[in-house]
Image 1 (cartoon, rainbow, N blue to C red):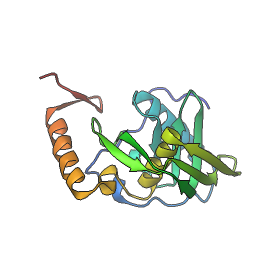
Image 2 (cartoon, rainbow, N blue to C red):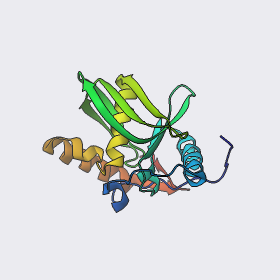
Image 3 (cartoon, rainbow, N blue to C red):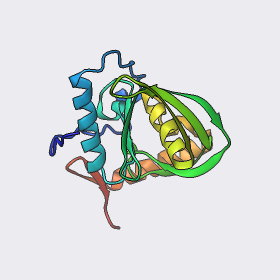
Length: 181
């Protein structure tokens, strides 16, 4: 993919209604979709801490997500998790809820199916961190946030922590950085 340096999307954060809406399926893989994917990768790399990014996180209501683990950039369109198994507890974060990491339990392994940029059906087996990434990004495509996956008491504590983080935040060029106290 060619570089579109300096041309990134703004990552939408908690409170933006676009994050609560189910994304539409990609029905036509054309140059516009390819450009969206390229720009999503640029945005992901600019974020520094992200390993995956779903289109709704940048305001695009399409079933697209990109990820890069171990310098292997990949994209999937119209993904579905068709199998899952086990249980894995891990601190989960989100580019749309910056600064918050919460212990979450999700299936340890998943089988995800979707379509690549060439229109070919693909099937990917994943476990642990990659499986969590797939589940997390698929949640974004369905308008579900981490807060929605939490038990009531955990959600209450996480919301209080996030409010505290945002009160201390200093937005610098769209990136939230915590001030030293």
